[in-house]
Length: 160
View (cartoon, helix red, strand yellow):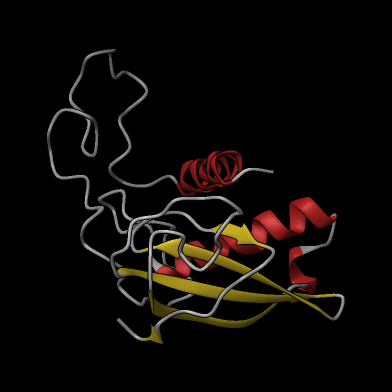
């Protein structure tokens, strides 16, 4: 599966999780098309440059209320994705680690053959999960949903 498809699939899972949480900023059922909604494409700040907040509260939402994914939210999405793709119950998936890191380039530690990536440091995160004795990596840029990385490279350093 190509990265774009993985990101789209993960974004769909994130959207489902966010909808299930019933965020207080959600528009009411009476909202009309064209009504202004926070985080839209209307030029308002979508929070994507805010980075990860390092939340560890298990009740933390999948995003920070401004559309930016938290480390806790990214971990929830990664666990849900791994459960869905392996047919495993989420309770049987162990979070080995979830940490903020700095990636050495735009591949986010998951370069694809013949891929071309920005050559700039990218703040992000790495989540390592374990299911049935196998470790699975999920990577992401700060504020963005995670994607599964089957051939991971290490980050430049931990802690951004």
